Image 1: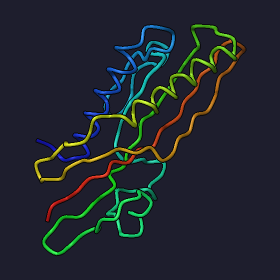
Image 2 (image 1 turned 90 degrees about the vertical axis):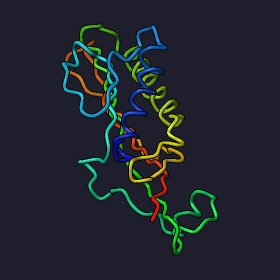
Image 3 (image 1 turned 60 degrees about the vertical axis):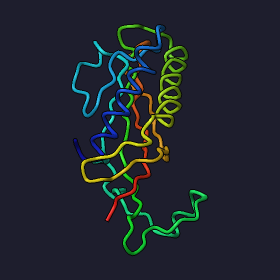
Length: 178
């Protein structure tokens, strides 16, 4: 057994691997989807997604216990904690997306279209990851996942060598027992 954040990363990465790599067979198929850091050559695995916890580039967005005021943002009317009960948390992470169309020599508009399809598909399936019911060895249970931020930027050098990189920020609603 593991801590809930590790279980979330493994479950999300497995789900996205199925949806982005195994179920896609065109130019927008992910070459690798994995938990934690992507360290391969993006020219070999030109479309990649990796899932991790936290965000080193945004340390002001940590995991946090949910207070009663933030529950209203969810449309839920439940206590954030009660005597003898548990409390709700946001467990946060991100999915990094990279589309390196260097060897493919696509025109910019085609490369842009393919990259945006990858980003859109990743967002679509990430928000549908089946995390509900995950329970760690400490009794923390996951309920739902939400996306709350996304970035995606174009880069590249000479004409017909384009790449896009970005991240999708997610948070999972969990409950920790007392």
